[in-house]
Image 1: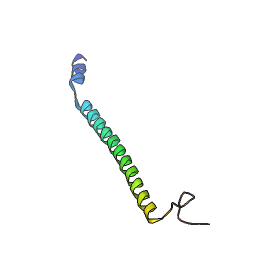
Image 2 (image 1 turned 30 degrees about the horizontal axis):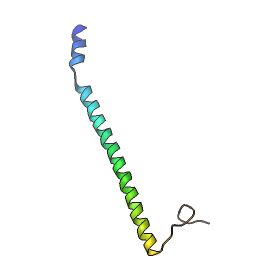
Image 3 (image 1 turned 45 degrees about the vertical axis):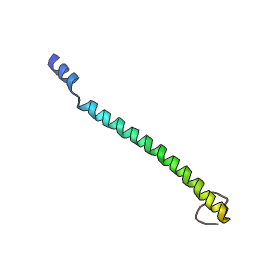
Image 4 (image 1 turned 180 degrees about the horizontal axis):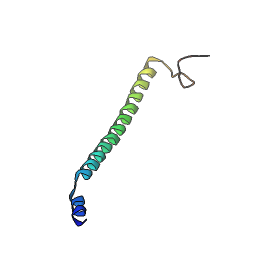
Length: 67
């Protein structure tokens, strides 16, 4: 019993998997933040271009037609 417990304490395979999971989660969070910032920047750029060209945003939230 004592031998099994000491082997369990020395086993690092589970810890490695958890570390990889934490790294993947951190990368995902950073990617979401970066994509959000890029999206906001693109929205400002396209809004500026549309304003200079004289276009206005459609009212009603968009959509693809219907009556």
